[in-house]
Length: 250
Length: 250
Image (cartoon, rainbow over all chains, first blue to last red; front, top):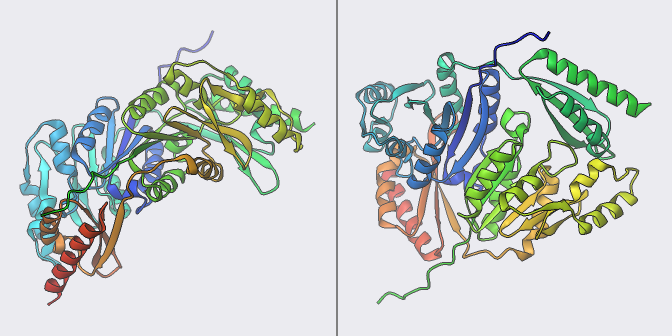
C-alpha cells in the first residue's frame, strides 16, 4: 500500500522588470537570472517574468495581473531620483493607495547623504516617495530604500543593489518544499533520445524532465534535467534515463 | 508657422520567451537582448516581454494577450524534438487551428537528415508539426523550420538558430519610423542632475529622456539617453542638457 504523503507546499512568484532601456537593447538585464537562482534556493517557483517600459499604465496592468495570480511579485527598476523613475507612483496607483514622502525613508536618506559630498536635492527626495502601508527594504549599497507592499517587493534595477535588497528580504521569505533536480549528460542528440525520453516522462509523472541541446562543433549532445519535489521519484527517473542510454550505446 | 508633419508610423512588438529552464535559472536568456537590438534597427518598438514555462495554458494565455495588443509577437523556445517541446501545439491551440505534420516541413527534414548520420526518428518528425495556415521560417543552422502565423513568429530558443531565423524574417519585416537616440555622458550623479533634467524633459515632450547611473568605484556618474523620432527635437534636448552640465560645472 503506498504511503499517503502530504501534498507539497508550493510557493509561487513572478518578476516584473521595469525599464525602457531593457526593451531598447541599451541594457542587458542581469536581474532575471539572479532572481531565478535566488528563488530556486528559497523553494519558491518563479512562474512568469514580464518586462515593461517606464510607462504607468503598462506597469499598473502588469502588476495587477501578476500580484493576484502569484504568492510574490518582485520588481526591478525605476526607483531612482530622476523624472523617468516612476515605479513607486505606479505601484501606489495599482494598489489605489496614496503616496508621499515617507518620514522613515527621509531619515534614511538624510543620514546617508550627511556622510557624503552629496546634497539631499529635490530629485534625491523623490526616492523617499513610498506608498501608504508599505514596509521598507534596506539598501546597504546606496541608501535609498526599496519597499514591500502586500505581496509585492519593489527593488532597484542596478544589479548590485537589486541583489543586496534580495539579501535583506531573504530571512523573511517563507519558501515551499524545495524543487530538487538532477542532470544527466547524454552523448546523443535530442532527436535520438526523444522518443524514449517521452516514454520515461510518461512513466514518471511526479517529475518534469527537460532536455537541452548542445553542439560541441562536431555533434549534438543533450543535457537531460529531471526536476521534482521528491528525491525518490527523481532517482527513479534518472535510473530509467541511464538504462535508456546504456541500451542506445550497446 | 510650424510645418505640419505627418504623424510617425509606429510599429510595435512583443516577445514571448518559452522555457522552464529560463525560470529555474538553469539557462540565462540571450535572445531578449538580441531581439531588442534587432527590432531597434528595424524601426519596430519592443513594448513588452514575457517569459513563461513549457506549459500550454500559460503559453496560450500570454500569446493571446500579446498578439491582439501588438503588431508582431516573436517567440523563442520549445520547437525541438522532445516531449517538453510543446510550443507549436500551444500556438495552434491559441489560434484554435488544427496542427499536423506539414508536408513542406517533412521535406525539409528529410533532405536535411539525408545528408547526416542521423535518422528521421518519430521524435525528429515532431519538428514537422506546424499549425494550419502558417508559413515556414527557414532554419539554415539545423534544418527544422520555425513558422509565422498571422502576426506571430515562432522561433527556436538556441541563440544561434534564433538569430538565424530572425535573419530569414528580416527582409519581410516592415518597420516604422526608426527610433533615434543620442547619449550624453554626464560626470554628475542622477541626484545632482535630476531636478534640471526633469525640467528639460518637460520642455522637450517629443523626446523620451532616460538616465542611467554608473559608479566607477569612486563616484556616481550618469548616462543620459535622449530618444525620439525627430533628429531636430533630439538635438534641441541634447543642447539643453549640455547647457545644464556647463552651468553645473561652473
